Length: 369
Ligand SMILES: [Fe+2]
Image 1 (cartoon, rainbow, N blue to C red):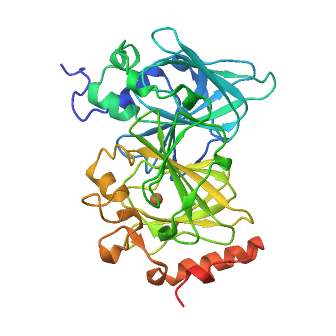
Image 2 (image 1 turned 180 degrees about the vertical axis):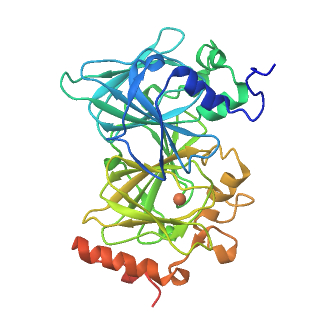
Image 3 (image 1 turned 90 degrees about the vertical axis):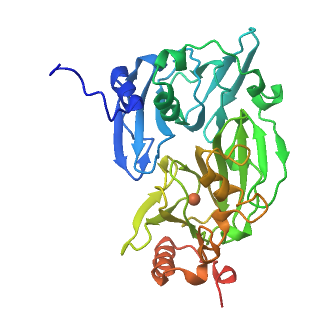
C-alpha cells in the first residue's frame, strides 16, 4: 500500500486538469490574457490555458482559448456553464440542439456569450490571417468537485430545454427586466458589443457610475458591466471571490486590500487584463482614460439565482427589500466604503495618476464638501 496515491485532501478539478495535460498558470492577482502563453488542449481542439488567479474562489475558473487562423474548436457539450468574452479576432459559434435545430452567431472583439448547458457547440475563427483569443469564465470547479466524474460532465445526454431561451437571444436581442438601480437585468445569450450596451445609473456606487446586469442562458453564472465616466473613480467595496473583472473600454487601475492592511495591492488594467478580487478583499476601480471606462465582471451567482446567501446579501440585500449590501455603507452593515470615510491616500494617489495621465479630474461633485 506504500505506493498508493493519497486518498484525502483531493481537488478533482485540479486533478482533471493534470490528466488533461492542460497548461495551468498562476500569475497572481491579475493576468493579461492577450499575452498568456497557451498550449494545445486536445479536448477542446484549441490551444488554451487554465488561468488560476488568487481571487478565483471555489466555484469558478478562467480559461483562455486561442483559435489559430482558419481553425475551429472540437464540437463539445457539457454540464458546466461558461461565459465567453471575445478578446481578439472574429469568428462564429454554431450550436446544435438534441432535436437537430441549429443556431449560429458571429462575434468579434468585445462580444460576450453563453451557450446553454449541455448543448453541442463549436467555435470557428473566420479569419485566415488573425488569431482568436477567448476568455472563458466557467463553473467547472464546482461541477467537477461535486461529481468528480468527467464522463458525466462531458458525456451526459440530458436536455435542459428551458435553458435555450428565445431564438432572438442568439442574434443579439434580449429582454430588459427593470428591477432597481444596480439590479436591472438584460436577459439574452449573446451580446455582440459590450461597448455599445445600454447601462443605467447606479449612483450609489459613486462617481456617476452606471451598470447593467446580465442573465445569460438562464444560468447561475453572473455577469454585469459597469461604466465609470472619464475623470472619476468608484467607491471601494468588498464581496465574495470569483468575480473576474475584464476591461472593456478605457484603462485605469484598481487598488485591492484586506481590512487592516498597511498598503494597497495595485492592478493596472487595459484591454486584455482580468482580475478577480479575493474573498472579502476591498477593491476600488479608478478610470485614468479620457473616455468612459467599462468593465465586465463575470462570476458565480446572479440577481436571478444568487445561489449563496453571501451573494444574495451582496446583490439583493437581506430580506430582499433592503438595499443591496454591495452599495450599502460598511457603517450600516453593508460592504461599501463611502468617499467621506476612505483613506486619504486613495484620493491623493489618484490625483497624482490623473496629473501624469493629463486627464482632468471630475470627482468634485461626488466628494463630500
Ligand atoms: Fe466588486
